[in-house]
Image (cartoon, rainbow, N blue to C red; front, side, top):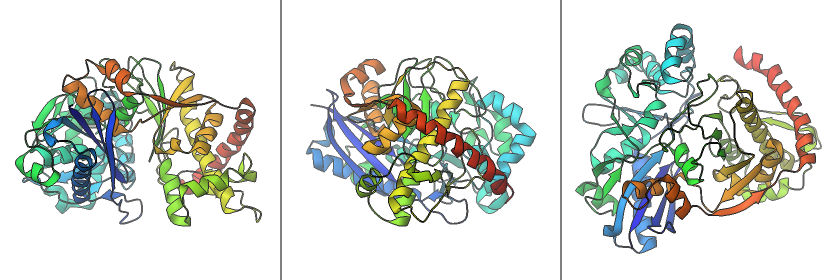
Length: 489
């Protein structure tokens, strides 16, 4: 038997999934690492922590599966888009990586909107905001000029990790689409956009297809990870498209609803839908895209809540089940790091509104779960306004959908039937991608047929949906009232 290894790097942990050529999961492992918050609006990660997590996962996968490392056909890495790591001429990190949720580049994004928004939007399909690489680079230039002068190579997260394995400096075109330095019409780095950032195209990695074999495990990486030297390494791509793939969404009209660090509502289409409040990326299926809307702090809100106020998810969920729909008037807004769809406002702040002396911790938990679901409804509503067609059933992905209560709340708020699969982790998608690159699977459809298994179906309660829609109107009014206060700070 031969095997395929996919390794994902998310907001707080790396997860590895090993599958065999029959599409069966053989072993999985997770290695956590910290996210750093050195100052207000800052969000960073130490690249050494990524490498430590990679090594831990590779060793654990081989140990758990008890396979011979020579039987791994290929390895694929994926990670969140936009996370920026700048390196010097010897490929050494100059500073910590700037995570995509970092919002320090608010001023730079505003300047870009005022001076270059039309040109940027026409080439990248996106409007300048703090999540993109271009504003991050401008922030570095203005706030850390000494570090900016040292920049020789610009990495994205998964590409740095793959460089550690192969000594090959490259990226894929989907990752490049998230940089705001790439022309999505011509599918190449754009000199004019690079000039705005005051960088040269030589600093950027060459772009490849996600399924390209771009290098092989080096002797040094083999010693550290336990992988076999000369094992092929696939280019890979971003975590969201890998989750979309691992959910089985590969046909036009398929929908995914994601409850992860960020929340996403994505529709598979046969063309991009350029819009200032949509995120447009290519799908790995040729000619397809997965335009989507986004909630910036989704499962990240629940993680913050748990870490700040204590408890474990299982107990928190159980207690919240006993609280009535609407949390007795308590409303939560998940704007811990600003918000994306439909506001694109990094100044927004999270809030609990309507607190009474009768409210318990369980009320706050329920309100948080409902508040994130309302934010996801705003994402869905924006897709509806653009008349993008999609199916009435959606596949729910991300760690948040493991909770039965949150899944039902989301289902009722959205008014959609939600399907969950046995495993939709992006690391599974990367293992499947490795299978396509290695010739194990003929194409994306065959990979889905062999690897994806349905687990549960959650149906919306129409009565609850109507009740939630009324509360949702209050949710929006609170946003409208507080937004000017946050923006004025």
